[in-house]
Length: 335
Image: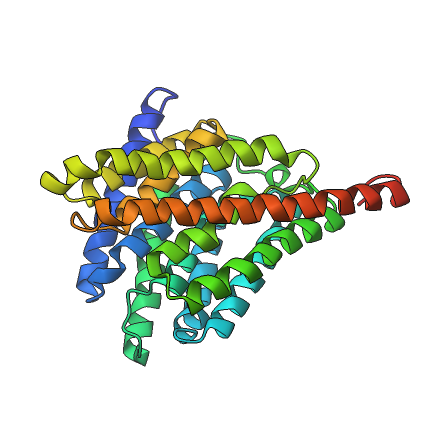
């Protein structure tokens, strides 16, 4: 149910205020725990929590927070070990693909952003101590739990939205497994390359972009993939355009929070996927940049995105005839 006085007109305003409040509090939590370098990572994790909560309710948001906190442990422990990092990302990709059976992947993939960032450009030292790891996990849990609490109290789902029907079976196990295999295949290509060649923050885009582009329906995915690809490139292009102005005026954190609020609003209104990806991409770039390196690194991020899009579309091209052959043999999908 809505809080007293909540209407369809006031809800977007409350949404923006909740996003800004959550991200400001996230920064304070990171500073309080002595992990200031993790502000970008925690902010993106909480943006994911916000979107999950807006779309699926606070229980699923809390589940996402707990899952990310657990995955943080092997992700940190895999630092300096490309093989271990690849295993963590590949298993995550496969699990995300399987979640497509219940149509959960459109929101849960946002948690992958923080995991990719942790794998490629960890805010912790190369030889992270147990204390460092504990503080980071605590930061994920504390900020995520606070965000979930604020969502449940200030921005609950409209009446009737948080129902079991929202988690009904959407795809067969075969399709979900095929989607997971598609994501895992791209991850097995992008992750070792990014980690072995020390691409750092640019490696984030190499690994992450397939999660933005690929969809469960291979045969119908080309148009969506092209839209999302253009959105990804447009998001990085937007940052390239505004980088000179940001370099001389405000911290990237300020426009990052503003774009995060816009991202959440687009998700709540089920806006066009390309627009959602464009704004989200710019948000991710700004949360993980400083004013000095923003103009210098933007072109490299654009290159990493372009390479990853080419890999994603190439894997789709290989998967398409395989799916057609399978459907011809089995006469349909089936559950």
